[in-house]
Each structure stands twice: as structure tokens, then as C-alpha cells.
Image (cartoon, rainbow, N blue to C red; front, side, top):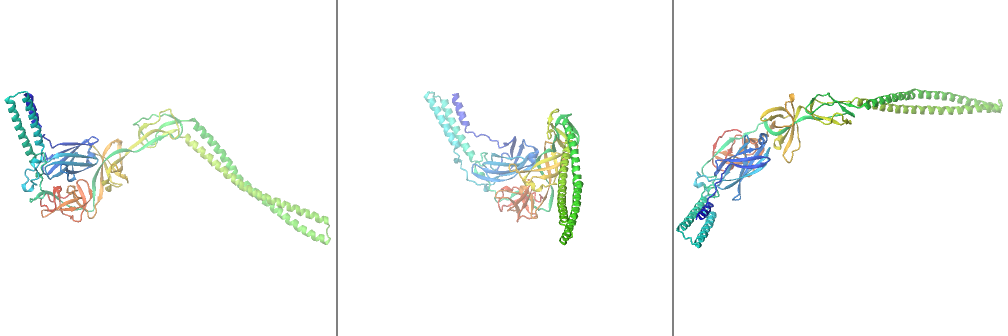
Length: 611
């Protein structure tokens, strides 16, 4: 009997619906970052629910550089809802209004972009609005009988009771109390099924599957909305703040190298030691360098003496030999001319019979000898001239050899003087690369130092903020919210990383006293300078709706009108847009804009606020 009662009670409990807590809802975005979603009111109701999103596990700079967008949908009906952009409340929190058109199961998807990247989806049940007028509801769309779940469960429970009764009858346990309990259980099952079926058709139930709770947004009564005044952008706006995560790096990292081979001596530096520019940090022991330098110097002197001798030969001796040969040629030419004249006279005398043939033959022999001497003199002149050219070529070659020997001697002398290893800059030793007593070759790095009197701030700036960043933009660093080093942008990467949609921006900052240690994470604040287009209009970011394309809702005489806009920039608080129908001084809806329809009547609140 006790077993029978337990079976009946457990069967009845299967008909009792579970209590579902609407919030908080937590989702993971990866890398230890979680996003917690809460609603006001809780659970959310038909109309507009205020949602708050809290990030945990992310740094303040990551949250500050993150943009949140959201979209809604009704998965049970295969319908998509509206979306928008969340506004930052600080301390890792974002807020946005979710338009809820009917009581049902909703799906809310958020997308984080920037410092935090990821997508999270939440499912929640929206309750009906008990205060909504009957004329504004889409009644008659629910049918209690359409939900066959409670009745199907009731049939199973009744069958279980019948089986139990049959078993008792077979055992002849015809106790009146048992049958009374069976009858009472059957009645309770039917009552619970009826109550569940009615609860499913109740528009205020938290299961939310009744479309009778869908509100008619337009209605007859004017809906309250919050508005602000759109203003025309004038000229340029200085100091729009751009936040980006960044790191600090040393201004310069250098390897100190040995400029000559030798055994490393007097090397006592360790990591963390400070060195000054020109300071000797070690010495090289290599006796062969000095001996080689001496031999090179002696050879250079010998080559210089030989070059001097060759130059004297080319400039003095050879030209003198040419002049001597030329003088001899002139004398031999004169003798030749004399004997030619004398031979002509002797021939005339011979023809006249004044001289003998023997005398004429003697004169002719003298003339022939003079002609041979002239030819020899001409050869000497040619040889002397050629000797000058050769002497000059030899002198030039000797001068080149002397210059080469002098260069080698100078190089060996300089190398012999490189026995001191000198630090090129003021810095801090990062690492000792070679131990003392090691034989090193020229060019071997023996220590690595970093220059930290100046630091490089390297930040990753989102692509939508790059237009306002240029060389010279003021920069400051913050650690744990406190201001730190200040400087100006020195370089902006011309290429955006396709994976992160960010570009590297670098600034050089002074680090007096070396108080800041490089290598750590910092929040980088850039004070950009933006020039507005002439036809740009400034509106609050909350006024922009994305459903069906970017647009804002304007109010005139209590009626709203949808105005398409082109978004030029949006920092999450203030947006710069361009629209032909938007004027300076127009009232734009900032609260309740996601649930409006064209021509809907509204009542304004907070009008006159300027973005």
C-alpha cells in the first residue's frame, strides 16, 4: 500500500512545471572572460526591458575598447526581432533596452568587438504585460487545447493507475481504502491537467508561449520616448579620447660586440648592471695583433721609400735622358747636313777635275758615317721618350703598393687598439652572452643592453579610430587608472591586421629616472584631432537604430518619422552622421527608438538635451 501511494505521488509530480529563474544569465566568451546578463524588471515583460551586461575576467582597458551590439529573435516562432548598440556604464558594465513585442521564449545574441571579441546567446522567457489594454493585444491567437502536453501526461498517469488497480485485483487485495485512493488520485490527475492547460493559455504566465500577450506597439495612445537635440558639427573637435591596449618596450636594444679576436678579460657585468656610453666593460688579450701591426708599419715604410725613388726616376732622370738624346740628335743632324753640302761641293770639283776620285770617295764615306750617327741619335731619343712613360708607370704602381701597405698598416694598428670592449650607449645589461676567459672572434656579441631612459609605447588601435590618429598626436599611458608617461605618436602602421582589425601605433616617451620598467602592459590614451565634414550632424549613439539600415527617429508635433542616415563615426556615446532630412535642432528619439513605427504618436521627455 505504501509503495502504491509513492507511485501515485511521483506520477502527479511529473505534471508540476519547474520554476525557471529569468536572471542572472552567464555565458563564457573564451580566454577566461564571462558575460552576465540581468533584466529590469525580472523576469522581463512585454514592452521594453532594460538589460545590463557585466564582463568579468577582462581588464579595464579591454572593456573600454569594446563595442557591444545585440540582436533579438523568437526561436519558437522562427521570427527575428530588433537589435542595437549597447552603451558603456563603466566598471565593465554595458546597458541597452530590449524591445519585447510578445510573451514567449526569446533569444538574445550579443557580439563583442574590440578589446574583447566573441559572441554569446541567452534564452529567456518574457511575461505578458498585465497593464496592457485589451484593444492593444492580439487576442484569440492562443488555444488552450493546442497544448496537448498536460493531457498526454494525464493519460499516462491514468494508465499507470489502471495497471496498479489490476495488480491489486489479481492479488485479491480488495480493500476499500485502496480503491478510494485510486479514485482520488485519478481525480487529482485530471484537476492538475486542467490547471496546467489553463496556465499555458494565460497571457501572463512565465512560459510565455501565448501570442495573446503580443502588444500592438502602435495603438491609439501616445508612447513615451526620450529625445535629444541633433546639432550640426562645426569645424574640428580636439581631444576625442581613443583608448587602446599597449605595451612598453625599451627605446633601443643593443648587442655589444668584440671588434677584434682575443681572450675576454676583466668582464664583470651581470644582468641589471648599468653601463655608461664609452665605458670599458671588458678587455681582449691577443699579443699577435701588436706584432702584426708592427710588421705592417715597417712594410708600409719600405713601400713608401720605393714609391719615392720611382717617382724621382720618372720625374727627373728619365726626362733628363730624353733631353740628352735630343741634344745629341740635333748635333748629328747638323753634321749630316754639313757632309751633304760638302759632298755636293766635292762632286762639282770632281766633275771639273779639281779633285781626285779618291778624295771624293773619302768625303762620301764621311757623309755616310754622319748619316748612320744621325739614325742612331734618333733611336736614342725614341728610347728615352719610352723610358719616361715606363718610369712614370712604375712610379704609379709603386705609389699604389705603398698606399695599400699603408692601409694595411693602419687597419692592423686599429685592430691592435681594439683590445677594449666599449659600451656604445647608456643602458642596463639585459644578459651576459659570453663568459670571461672565452676566446672570441671579431664581431662576437658579449653582452646585450637596453636603453630605458626613453621608452617606446606600442598600442593596437581599432581601425575605426585610425582616421583621427597621426604623427604628433598626444599620448599618455595609464597603469591601474593612474596617469603615467606622456609623449607624441611617432609612427602609425599603414596596414591593419586582418585578424584583429587593429593597427600598430608607436610613440616615444621619456622615462626620467628610469622609474618605469619596460615590458609591462599599459592602457594607452590618445588625444586625437577630428575634423568634421561640413554637412555632418552630431547625435547620441543611442538614437541610431540598425534594423533595416542605419536610421534615427525624429519627432514633429508628437509624431515620429524614420530618417535614414549614413554613420561617419560612432564612439559608443556620440555619433557623427550624414542625412539629407536631418536638420540642426531636430529632436531625435534616444529612449524607446527600437520599438517605434512610422507615424506613431509619442510624448517626449528629456527633450532639449544636446549630445
